[in-house]
Length: 81
Image (cartoon, rainbow, N blue to C red):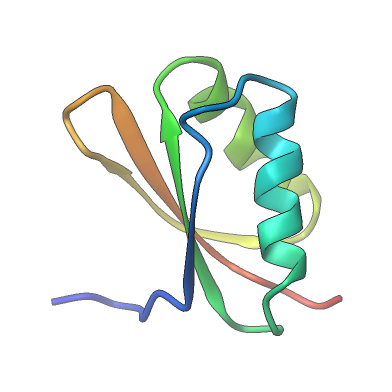
């Protein structure tokens, strides 16, 4: 039972900080206000830095899901432009 519908997904497991946030930010910019993005990222620096940076940009973190394989999915709702 999901509390949200995912509008788009971006996989940033193949890049390292700070490119992780840049790639996530570009994906968010392509969405309309209110749409939801799922960002797949590696454990470690991305999980520490990407959610904080996205929140600082004013977007809403809905959920951080541990995929139990060394990756996470960060679910974000785009706020404003």
